[in-house]
Image 1 (cartoon, rainbow, N blue to C red):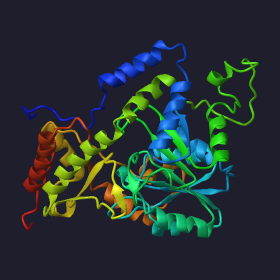
Image 2: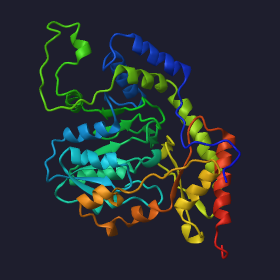
Image 3: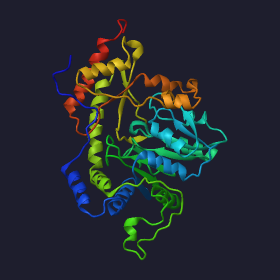
Image 4: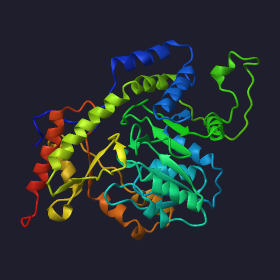
Length: 392
């Protein structure tokens, strides 16, 4: 029986009048594709996270693909990726023509750590993509130390982690290459979009060319130069650029990033406080080195051994009560394509395999009211208590 209370969606994007005005102004310009607004978005974004260079692209998937292409990998080169991530992270390795290797996650943060990476390193390891799961930064100091010892490149998948800080330093300014997402559910959105961040000018220049078919001169800049019609394709490239129309939305949203993050922090605190001392549900651990958390996700682990129902049934019970929750993620090695295409051993990815069955992502976004957040956690607690085993 459905709840008579209003439904609480898993996510509602934050789109303001100022956002609509910014997009409308971009549409009124004669230049709609990648142009001056996109360039301004890149500059503002790099300033926000204290990095030198940015390349705006049409998705974080594209950003990861380009980043790997900048490393000039061979088919025998191995790239280690966490099993607990979205398919994009794994597919980027395949797009780049390299060999995909999966690493397990930390039990309490679901991030891949230095210990799990060590188990997968071989002489063929050329790169490791770390994912800041849910907005929680990985232990970068240990991972970067490992990269120097074994001479591999660290690429940060920051799809969840814009505005997160590791030891008071913004995520995205630590490694050679970092990739961000502006998908609809992210803390700021361009509907679809991504960003490559680097402090290396050569990498920036190459990434810029690869993102726009290997062309040496950007079209909007050529129009004021001699031979504005002329250009040269200097390297192999893709059509991955971000348009001014979408960049205008991102540029507008960027102005209120701190406000958006604070709102998510408030919701997360309500969840944390409500779960203190509640044995059946545990939030993921916030690492001491995480000095600011984007709270893209708020994930809890359910103690299923103490319940008479499984995680999927809990999600259905929440749905009946008008609350939408989700799961992030089904591990890469558990998807049909990867199971059938690669001989992946599940016995060395045991944490990811087990934790997947226990996790639930709760709604967390700026439009979610305090009362609705309290209702989410209250209903979840009611469900697990209702189905707890007698000896609990």
